[in-house]
Length: 222
Image 1 (cartoon, rainbow, N blue to C red):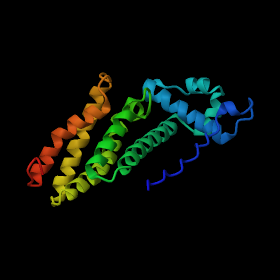
Image 2 (cartoon, one colour; image 1 turned 120 degrees about the vertical axis):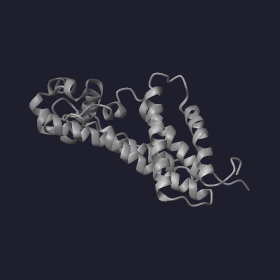
Image 3 (tube, rainbow, N blue to C red; image 1 turned 30 degrees about the vertical axis):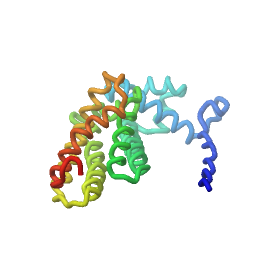
Image 4 (tube, helix red, strand yellow; image 1 turned 135 degrees about the vertical axis):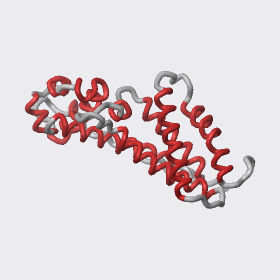
């Protein structure tokens, strides 16, 4: 007897947006989320120095004092947007990776999700590449550490799945090498998006997995 298909999940209920309310009656929480979303796009488009609270207020259709009341200073707003973007990236990659049970498939799914996040125009990746209010305060530096930590877990699972043990420093070094490779690939891919992300991920993992197997002392066809 065939296994019955599980019932489909109900359609998600969309969150309320500004357009759902009459002018002047928008709840504070809804307006705040609108301003945050617009701020992320503005910072991604113009960078921290080039973005202005006047333009943000204009895009939101409110006065500048209202913007300050909702989200505080420009610097605090920028840091909050960076935190949101970093959290969104982590959630996208982790959700994709944990959807697979096989360690190699987990790493592939996470990498594809990462590239799709990168592909969003004026999205979180663009924001994370901007310079912050202080010289050298690029938020991408913290995101690298976050992504390397996730890749360390995935690399460890992959190595353990091969039935061998590696020194922790070797696992961490592999994870950082993979993270740097995927980040470099992301920069290049922004100008070459005619190449499917799945093909890029398959190509780069084909370069790395023989090395992982060699460190594990296994033949390439093991």
